[in-house]
Length: 236
Image 1 (cartoon, rainbow, N blue to C red):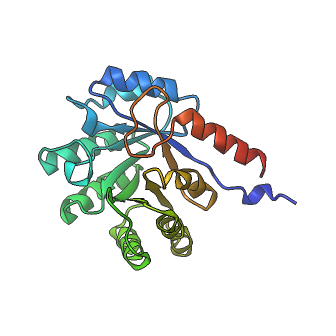
Image 2: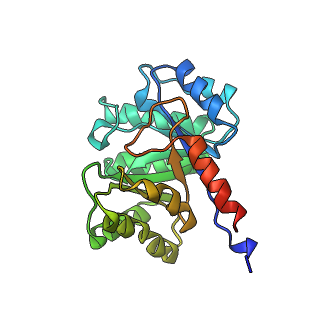
């Protein structure tokens, strides 16, 4: 017999990137009917603007300002980068994403500012080349837990199914720690993990706008992911 109380929360975040506020809004507005969260990639914008997004969008917003040293587009001063995220938290962001490898003092300043505003914090770690060993992944998870963020995010590049299984297995460790975790793999081999993760206890999965550019390798269109998640929910 199915147990509805045990049904997983299949949270979908649509990641939106574009050079201007208008281009981001166009994609975000289209995604709102199927997204639980919309990620705004500030590092994709030529002149980041935050306030206009809250005027036009009602879906919870996640702000990310990914630096080039972690696969993003921001190449400027670190203090300015984090200041934009603090501005987003103060403006009413539901979430902000901060990289695990960010300077410790700046990272802690951002986490404190976000927590004071009731903004959820995601501490992230990405590997665009490979997937670490199980022990290496566990060490990353433990560092994330200790840094004080509310949610962890570990995303690697899978070359085979063994890589995928190691990353998905992190959900067991995270659950024992009581630490919500986003964990899946990029690349063709990792595509299945983008769906499986939320059925295995993952906090959230990410998708690309239907008419927009993917922000990571292997990212599926939002409508495709939503349709699959809806089918899974019907079987609970």
